Image (cartoon, rainbow, N blue to C red):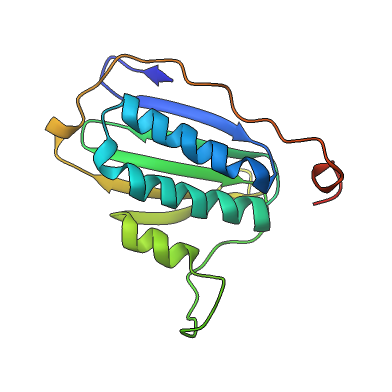
Length: 161
């Protein structure tokens, strides 16, 4: 994790293109929010990260990167992948089993959106929470564990996605 003199705190992880690591990544996000004293939004952020990463791993293409940004008045999650598709909110029937990810993100975050990568080969899906600056007191940077590694199984071997 890094912290700037102006109180901006950041952490980024390159996430294996493997659904099996998503639970560990959600735990790492919760740990970062705890260290940054942002537990009030932790449940919403962890659920949002799960939705965004799940979409990136299922529908996107590697590499996938997760970034967390905490400033004096807001917190932002960014998930970048290099797949060609753009996520969109779907108009679903009440009994639909899949496709509610962006609706969940919209309900939990103050704002969200999709930004194409500069080279046009992918996109960054982001969500933002705003909060009073007194709730965003900078804390010292504390090292978090390295990103999870994909298990080497036939289902997660390169070329089998």
